[in-house]
Image (tube, rainbow, N blue to C red; front, side, top):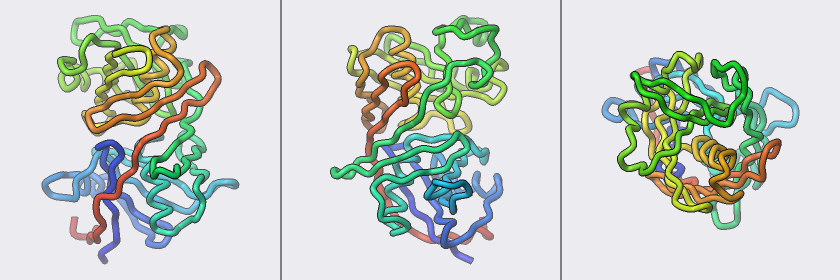
Length: 279
């Protein structure tokens, strides 16, 4: 039976979104991989599923599946599209919603100008939480990758990130080194590999090789992780514009123990139906 879907993007990071509140669906990893395929399916970086909340105080449950079929904990650009989706589909009339994720509660807010602000939670640095194999917490770790040593900041934004500062993102080895970092044995649940160029204390450029999706045009949690990493190294102010391949996000972080705030676009591209049984 055909089910409706919506194609959306946040700064070029694109999603197929399903309303499982009114149209319950069953997705297998194989079906997700076919949906995400840009030749044989609809094409996307992630599949997002809106479900009824299962915990008190939440308006919805939000599930995220990468293009490789694996379910992940968090997606910042997806969170912005999520609030736009539930408002446009009249599933809620709230401007700010409480959303249950694998990483905990988030609270995206629709702004008057159409942008969306998300409280992305407090970053975590303990290696066991990320998770990352290290004897103790450090601001920067030495990581051996293909016989070379790179300096990375490691943290969790609800999902794991390894951020390195590079002189120029255009020439950074995102698609050659990125897959090696993603699957590095010191990251038992794999990791998102970020390449951060400092323009000045309020502006950066960023490319991210995402776990399970490859390089994307934007990564919301990656942008948050990059600003946190830059702040921890003393390189950035508390409000930073992050320029990604698909657009710019505004990230704010007051410091340790405080939540990271992210603001950016959420755009509906088109709507349609698809017969999942024929994938």
